[in-house]
Length: 145
Length: 145
DNA sequence: GTGCCTACTTCCCGATGGAAAGTGGCTCTT
DNA sequence: AAGAGCCACTTTCCATCGGGAAGTAGGCAC
Image (cartoon, rainbow over all chains, first blue to last red; front, top):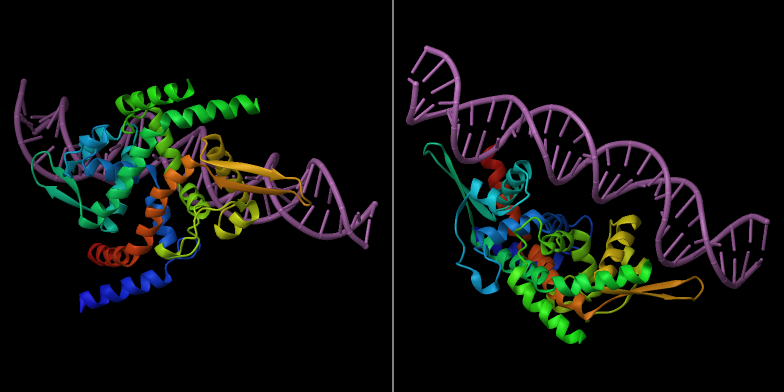
């Protein structure tokens, strides 16, 4: 029953959802995931901590403080907020272990992993084409100055 | 000469750029492209106007007003601003044709096209997994209410 | 002239994100 | 028993950002 409902929804999705329409739910979802902290959190939990494409050790659970350290510059407020919304959307799980002091770990779900395949490409693209972009910026600024 | 310099920069890129570091230029670039309007503009110019993955007619130049209509909900201010920054970064070109009234068209460059491959995946992901996300949201809200 | 067209640009204001300080629960020290 | 410390937040305050609406520029038609 659940499976059928999911299959039906999927079929409906392919037919109805269009992120170009402002009122479409998929547009809000696109807005949500087109966010720097979302991309970086998915990359972090996906195991892309090292700079090179080949440097991934696969997805792994991470502690809150570990994420805060890796995503240099994120405020605690945004980190918590973003993690909560990703948890609500089913992209990751939040696990509280009653050690002392308490340990909270975050881990990608299968759904989160499927999006990670794309967000990792965004990061790699930014790193791989940085120099090209820098050159274009120089040209543009020189031409418009 | 130009080619060698590009190759050198590329080599340096792979060695040095890491988007997890707040001060790294690639981090700012990641911030820039992890933006809903950037994703939608690239999708629009990449020819993804129809909702289905198979519905692309390939990249094409579009007028300002055409983009404004397709990206429902974008303000003129943000559209202009985002297009300018994408032009500066070399992802698209802006062409003014002195018709009457004036015609301004935007078209992806090769660099823009290479990023479009990824942004289109983001849109498809949002549309394909919308129902799953909706289910998770219901579950989460039911559990935390 | 007046109006109309496209493609912006400017102004104002409410929403959003960052910095920093505060909270709570538990344990270890003195 | 009273601090002190640690982790994971939560709250407060303020600056910046983005949206809505109105204004601008330049050219032609009437």
